[in-house]
Image (tube, rainbow, N blue to C red; front, side, top):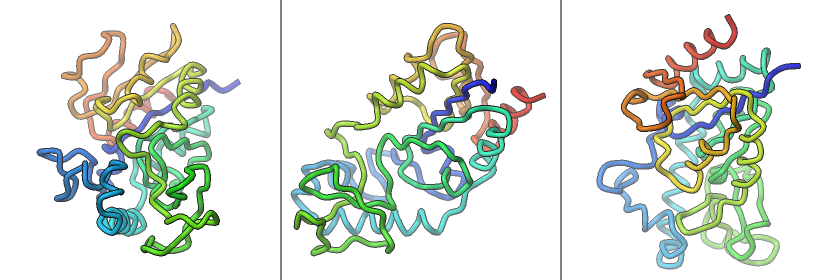
Length: 228
């Protein structure tokens, strides 16, 4: 029976497709203060600014393409039971063909009710405008988990992590909590890999196998290690 391979990805894997990482210098994201566009308070203060910000992110996501790392993870499904858990809100894993993708922080190409987050909608356009409402009559907002909001899929992600035979971290510095706690959910005996250009400098357990490389380079190395 194929081993369970659980892959936890962050912004670093999408950066090689041209999507900028969430955390820029000085707490800015593409020139915006994170508090203005990624918090419930920011939404309350300026709905128009938040919608415009995510409309731009959505358009960038649609224009981007999966890179070699996304595609290589899809190919690993030939040898393993692969489950991807991602912090990313883009859909590049899905467009690469990965069958099992769990988004911790939402999906940019979906909208949700601003009144009840359980009302989620697939989008057939690249924008949400003021006046676009859900079936409850409330304004639609991006289907994105903001700072200060609960992470609905976190317990499911933890359960999947505990079932892993191999756990791989790619393109995340594990600084965003509570998602970063997933590393500590792996069971004894699980083989753990960390792929990051600064992998050697990140202070985690010495038993972790580190691949100091970008996502595209690192997944290629990982694939050879696991399949040859």
